[in-house]
Image: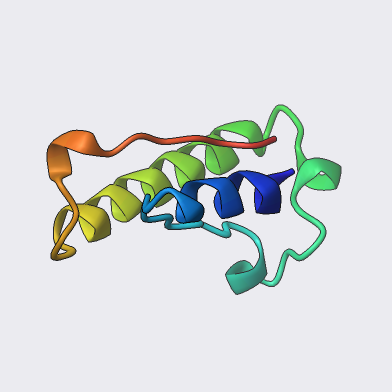
Length: 75
């Protein structure tokens, strides 16, 4: 589904930045198996930090209007 949405946006001239929170952290299968009451805050905070970093990159990218950025996530 993600590829279809990305292709649709790109075909209409919309820039796309895809954030992969798992592969760079050597978690290619995700974190669901490790999610529990003790790890929830860690993973939720980490995701928020990833979003903040992505916004910072987008706002600093030439040709990107910082007032026209939207976020879309998948679970």
